[in-house]
Length: 145
Image 1 (cartoon, helix red, strand yellow):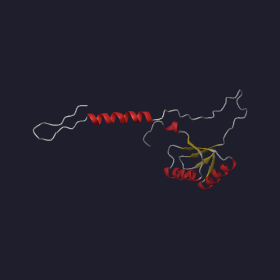
Image 2 (spheres, one colour):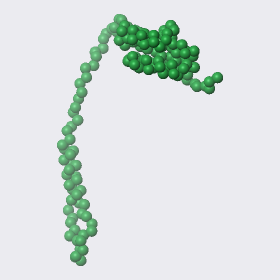
Image 3 (cartoon, rainbow, N blue to C red):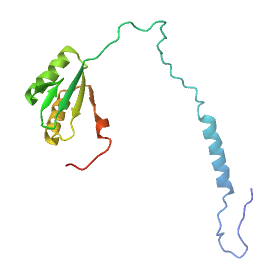
Image 4 (tube, helix red, strand yellow):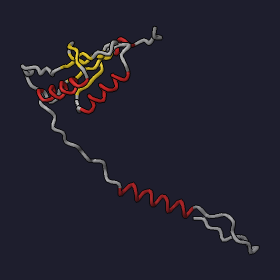
């Protein structure tokens, strides 16, 4: 390690000797590397074993289609209903099947306000399986007539 005691003219030394600082930093780096534990952590997961034959019964969830027409008519599986009946039907379907699938398909010129009311009813009923269908019909947007 080189050290400078300054010049003989009585002036203080203006440059800082960084060699001891670098030595200390290298020692600390080596200490940190040694103290870091080796990454030997493992997470064991019980994976399902493959079965020779698939299950014979296929579970078909109840699918209910809810359509809002351009004339602002609400259709539940093709049957016209009102918003009050919608609440009853959704809750009744949940009583039969705890996880019914509800598909919502608003038509092209359906009312946004009624669609919003229906979405509020659906979200309040805590339906777990919900989806929009028919979106492929609106792949290209055009100006209303």
